[in-house]
Amino acid sequence: MKFDPDAFAAGAEQSFAQMYPVLAALGQHRPRMLADYERVLADARRFRREHLEPSALRVELEVRRNPEYVAEDIICAASTAGFFGTMIPKTFGGAGLSFGAMIVGLEELGAGCLGLSNLLGVHGLAIATVSATGDIEGMEKVCRLLTEGERRGRPNLLSTAITEPTAGTDVEDVDLLRKARLVCEATPVRGGYKLNGRKVFISNGSIAHTHVVIMPTDKKNPVETTFAFLVESTAPGFRVGRVERKLGQKACPAAELVFEDCFVPETARLNSKALPGRAIELVLGATRGGVGAWGAAAARGAYERALLHARTHKVSGRWLIDEQWVQIKLANMWKNVALARALYVEAMLSNELFGLSQLVSGGAMGALQQRLPRAVLESQALRKLVVSRRTREALQGQIAAMEEWEVDTASAWGSASKVAGTDLGMENCHLALEICGTAGLRHDRGIEKIYRDAKLLQIYEGTNQLNRLEVFHRGVLRATARRSGGAA
Ligand SMILES: Cc1cc2nc3c(=O)[nH]c(=O)nc-3n(C[C@H](O)[C@H](O)[C@H](O)COP(=O)(O)OP(=O)(O)OC[C@H]3O[C@@H](n4cnc5c(N)ncnc54)[C@H](O)[C@@H]3O)c2cc1C
Image (cartoon, rainbow, N blue to C red; front, side, top):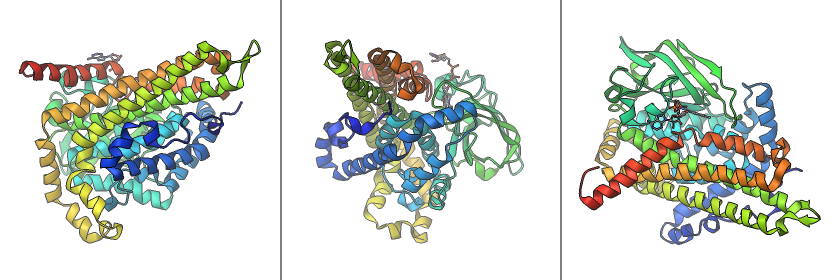
């Protein structure tokens, strides 16, 4: 049976305000924000129907045959639809929408296929990482790789390389970083740096044009010496190693990146203070809400398919949908989608109000994007004004001036949404398999694929265990400290 999202009313035709009613109220105060969400949702819904649903299973089988297969047709179609430029400021050729608007689109795309959605969305991690350094020249560079490529029909993709073979969780947390067993180091040499070591499991690593590589200049002191480097895939001494054969999200390649005396010029190092600390917190506080949205997508994909099955199959002569045990499970699944969505919207709003997003799409930058016509925003004169040392210093000043409670709030909600959304996604996969029985195990029904895809969400962007600890430190301890007047 072919999956047909039009065959039921599982939210497929609802506006975002209907899918998450609190936004309808919020939209009265910030109508532009809601209008942006609705616009991205409508575009993503069309793309899901026209491109993702028909290709998801085909791409999965292609990658099983050849792990290096890349769905170029989907990348080009997304490029034509303008997805890569969604959250990029108009000054750099993008649509100038917020990080939140992009996340709304990710839920819709993820409900169609989590692997393809990651293939099309993981550049958000790279943009967030570069933005958190405040290096406006670097921001322009990575943004234009996407938008100028997009105009030509194929963006130059970005990857973000943080994880090392012996340090995964440890490089996602500043306190753990102190004791991390790192293998990567960027040694200062004349005119630049020589990068050595290996990064592993890097999404889009094998197909990206530019890699945002996180490395210390002294691996014995990573907390004070870790920087972000922009490394092109043509850099001497750089090569792609193994492309992983993994459980799920097969459409998005995860690759090993190898650096062997890889020389990069001085300018490849983004101009910022050492990264750990605030920058990492800002990045993960922003992007973990996106993984929460993919958790909601997994919950929704499983729910939609189970509902379709229940409406079209009989057991002992009775439609499954008429059985009370099935109705209770479907009600639980609907509730899980709603809960996962509520949390990622909270995370998204926290990020827009207190986190990284307020720097990129809020404040003076945001006001410019909203008020000036596109012709002015794209003019050389404005570009010169924006891409300047003054802007960089202003942005870095803003980052330094952010209050700790703001960063903690965005981080706690980001992590809470990641944990809850991805766990609820898995729970819905279990429930869908219970409703569908053996039908749920068949590849052509799509449920077993969502199950495998969703499992990966609990691991990347910090495992759910690490994210629970983040909630403890940023949420529980902070709240306790505030009540007792102590310092957490
Ligand atoms: C599909 C996929 C795509 C990915 N894409 C990227 C990418 O684009 N860029 C990138 O840099 N990385 C990427 N990763 C890597 C990902 O971020 C790491 O897998 C993740 O951080 C966990 O690290 P690890 O696998 O080394 O596990 P480990 O750190 O070895 O952890 C193993 C287990 O121990 C637990 N654990 C470890 N330390 C602690 C602790 N201190 N307290 C409590 N529990 C702990 C973990 O929770 C986990 O259960 C990707 C991973 C996957 C699966």
